[in-house]
Amino acid sequence: MTYARLAPWARSVAIAATVTSLMLAVLIIFSEESPALTAWLKATFYHHWLGKGALALILFTVTAVALRLVKRDIPHGHFHFSNAEYREEKLVAPRLSTIIMVEAIAVILSVGVIVGFFLLHGLKMI
Image (cartoon, rainbow, N blue to C red; front, side, top):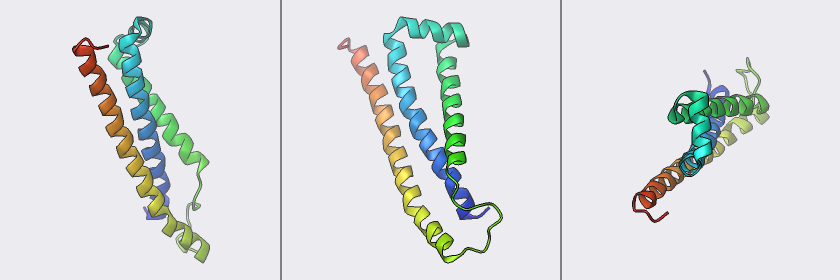
């Protein structure tokens, strides 16, 4: 598989991972603070952690596929690039690296928020 065909999927998956990471951080904190949300997750998915995992998988899959279907860079079967397609392929790398950097920052932020919440919760500060 060529870079030009793989890069759009990599971008879509990176954005989906970013969105899913942030959603999980919010869902974990809200489910700890909202007994109604925890009860719904337990009733729907048998256990609240299974519910969070299922919602994360659904969001990740839908987001990745939807973003890939919307964004069409280079049609399948094009192995000989025109100058415009070659320039577009060359421009894909910075956008992909930027998206991956944003993904890493979002994951670090999500983990920090979750750890901070449980630390403050454990110390009875919230």
